[in-house]
Length: 285
Length: 133
Image 1 (cartoon, rainbow over the protein chains, first blue to last red):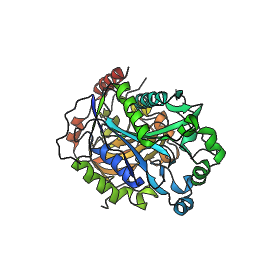
Image 2: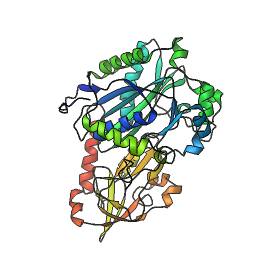
Image 3: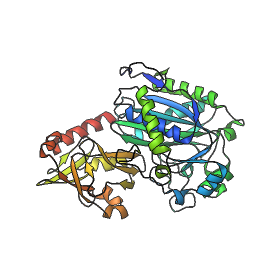
Image 4: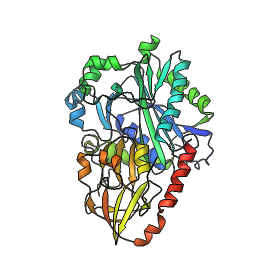
């Protein structure tokens, strides 16, 4: 954590936060803190790669916990449950590299349009996957799983510039937008245990293997998070014509992270019930 | 092609305001629902809640994103559209009519000076649309 002044808005110099493996609650608290303060503190676009320990399931903002996941299985297996600030469906975070990107909505590279934001970020991930030797496709058509047994499962329904390899989803992303900024985060699958994901998400395991692929399946090896993060960083830099300066959270971001952890992401009231307080920060009125 | 209603105020956060005396009805603009895409869910304040101009008052989810709804006015919420809970798609199909979101007893009519009229909003959206090309 540095005590430096916020960077002036140099559009080609972005911030890369350190890679950390954290509990689910802290991951979401960091993401939201960075999102809320980005414009207020005039911070540059910020990218972060991270991991989850213990494994966790994250729910989309509006999902009903008991309908979408098996809470008993999560408690028994020591899988954390967290509710994201972004939309979308349930995701089991285990063998993956997760990215989050925060920027102003009117940043020249993103133009304010939601789909365009997905397209620009997906283009960077596509480049990374190509550098690993894969042939990814960016899919721009929706394929709804509504009414099927896979409905709860995020990775079963590619839509809008989602990323496929061999016709199956390898990376899923979700966004939230407010106050002139957006947060997009997503999971790039390194490996998966279809049986475990199926038990947590209460969907058939065959449905998961049939709709999802992983880097292990495609590369024939388990890629390390640091190698994958390096490839992704280079792909973002070269695709967008930017450079990353490595830096930590500002004092204000760190303080907001702690408040969000205590009052929101660390509470069952938010994670399981989806109830936040009027200021959205989880602190009781 | 987004629609605009001439008798409304608009905000840069893509909400509209219909004013009747000191009561405002608030919704999201046609441009907003078009950009958001198919709507899935909305979270609105309770009656009696206070809303503040330029502060979040709710959350909306579409197939593309979760977005916070930013209030164009300040005051007390005196009505919330319960019908849209069962039929969220009406916000897509009738954003200026049946898709209204909340009714607010305005605290300060002068705040309306901070909003745009239909022509100004049309220009504002035109700017955004032009940049997106």
